[in-house]
Amino acid sequence: MVTKSLYPVYFAFLLVTCTPSAKELEGEAVMVDDKTNKITNINWFQGNYEYISEDGIYREFWRRRNNTEYSGKGYFLHKGDTSYLMRMELFADYGMIKMTYEVKGQTGDKRTEFALTKQEKGLFVFENPFGGFPSVMRYKLQGDTAINIMERGFEDQKEKLKEFTIVRIKGS
Image 1 (cartoon, rainbow, N blue to C red):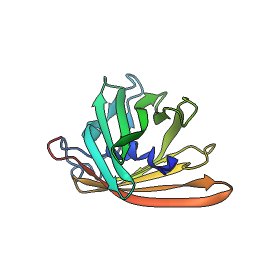
Image 2 (tube, helix red, strand yellow):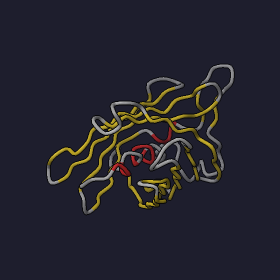
Image 3 (cartoon, rainbow, N blue to C red):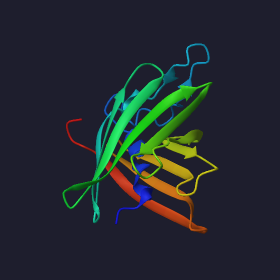
Image 4 (cartoon, helix red, strand yellow):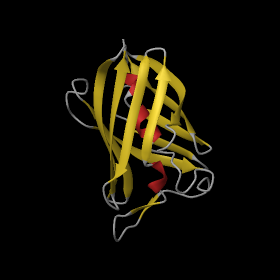
């Protein structure tokens, strides 16, 4: 059975693409312009991504809507069947960078929201202190083609930790 812990994989995929390279941006902070609400230094996450596990294949697609919003869609294939569909957003909100996800049939068709709380040298941490699992998601860029993801939170009153690496689909 596919667990809910794969939902946030989507955001990790948005952290790597070819323009500009992840290596070039290791020291660049993702920011929001207070006057225009424009997100800067973040175009590099657009693209198509994949994570392959024993459970199946997760695919995700991110596109820029405008200067303040990015949208994504993701799905998980398990033995040829789609296990879940997800809609995601990354956006500027009053000077903060936030991301949301909605998993059809698994989040009560409601969006779960995370805020960017820490960033340094290719490391990005998003948190939702009111969430169960995951409530913390850490993304660490590994060059231009991979991201190490760590998810942490509580499930059934027990602390849970999951870590894995995802890659960009060639040609995206």
